[in-house]
Length: 426
Image (cartoon, rainbow, N blue to C red; front, top):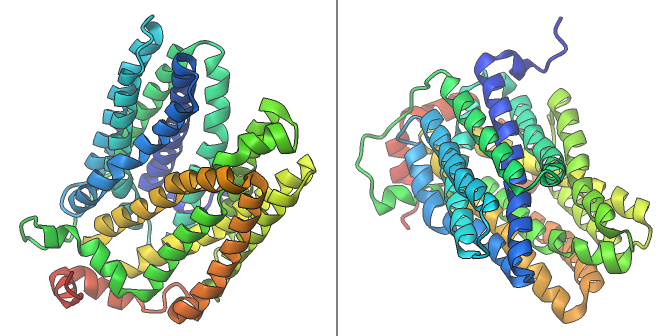
């Protein structure tokens, strides 16, 4: 009997899994290259911060239209188009890396193009997962998809750093190859029919993802809790300060600190792929968020490098439990005809928690210091988990993922128009 997880025995999911892994690694390599390229040409920390902002801004304008498209157009084609656009951005960055110009605005322009490509590809890539495996394998498939993403967070920065030793051109050439491979793999997946409403595009249809989430208290609680937890408790932007001034471990130590959460998340994703969560899923998500906050508060207080690595890995493991619960609830509760738009809203929340969370961490650390900011952020995350348990009892008391039965979900998929009309008006 094969030792492979069941979803990987499905040809199309295996193609998707590799595509997500390769595209994720390519994104991380590109981000490493962008950071080094901008720093070399400006030596300005504000310019590095601007890169993070450029990664988020396209989501504000493009992710909802991209989600709407994902519910009307072949999702394979949209994901492939997004990664092809990212490949075009890499061609431009490859040329800039070989040039002698010191102008930085072309780098920012191509970074913005990369953000647009990501906003186009991500909703389609997330929405296609349930159609690639039988319903009984969906939870394992989501855990494996998260594992591919976390693997890219570990491997991508390390590979990007090694490639930089060969020069910036090598970094962007590798990212270019990764995006092209991901695009080809998505195109190799067999086409899936979509449940379309047949109505023309409109602002009301565009906002159905928001309306659906607002009407579903379980999904609203899960998405908003995850956003608040990462925004308060995340300390990625402050890790250079801890590496240099608190733990005194230098650049290599900084690399280890950045990788530690992904290592914990990767190990947890692998475990959950083999042993999926079955019961008390809402309570486990709330507990995982509290553990994440506790680990981050402990990290802020730690003066031991090994202990700091362990606490960051624990935070990553807890965050992965939250991610798997949130993603599984979204996939099981959402009708297929709305999956692209709901995935787009989820992507927007994730972008807000990550990129804007880094901005918030920097502002608070500038006011009170990195250590107090991290400790208070962790304690704030614990408080958020307690508050959300009271605000969203539907989430806290959720026992199983499939509490509303697959039959009801299938009816929703076949009657999307009636479902949409029943939602509260915007």
